[in-house]
Length: 311
Image (cartoon, rainbow, N blue to C red; front, side, top):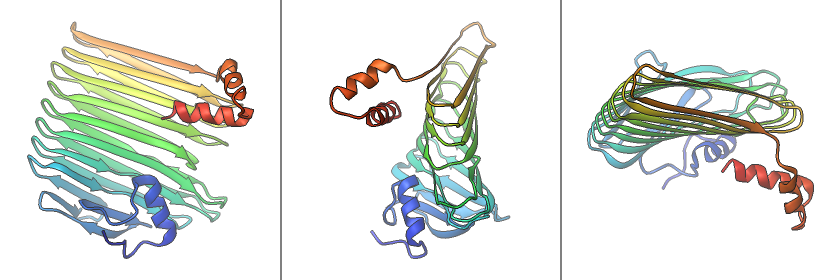
């Protein structure tokens, strides 16, 4: 594989953090750096084109495409840069692909840097997608690192989507909004992992509409809040047919942090089976003590528990 031609060392490090990219990937990709397209490649089955108004990209995946990937990470290394990007994904019938997104912000200045990415997914019949989105922030400037991702998912009959959403370092403020509409037999799995510290704020909102018979959704959030940080988890599942829905928020609270969880389920059909769970608590003292007897300090034991919880 070749190296990226228009990516500097700071941006390359962030690409590694948010998309596990060290070099140009084998499949289709679109790299956005400091508000501009830095590099792009399509394949015979996956086409990436810019929108006519320059607001983002369209990714079109041909029916039957299998064992291919799309990388679309964004990196910002200029202080004070604000952008809104709209990306649409059209996944053809019977396709089976991996899509890797993510945003990294390096801010060493005094002005806030912000990226708002709006992603819309349209899954054809029997299509399968694994979607990975990671957020990462770094830099010792006074300016904040702000990310507000929006995700809209439309799933046709018997399609499947697995979403992995990770934010574990350096993001000062984030508001995530995810909505999904599922047709008959469609299945959606969402796994969120979140860590906040300092005075960071994170809000995650999920709205899933189970519109077709035998559709299902599983929304799982695991989070840790430290120091003075704040988190809010909002989950809404609407059962509009014979369906199965489950939402779960499991959080560890530490120091002077604050966490709120507001799960909501609504059954609009007699055969809708819906469950919600929410648990917030501190690390059990016996867990700390057990690890300390093995030679760890209290801080090391605490870190070990948190890391294991967020895996």
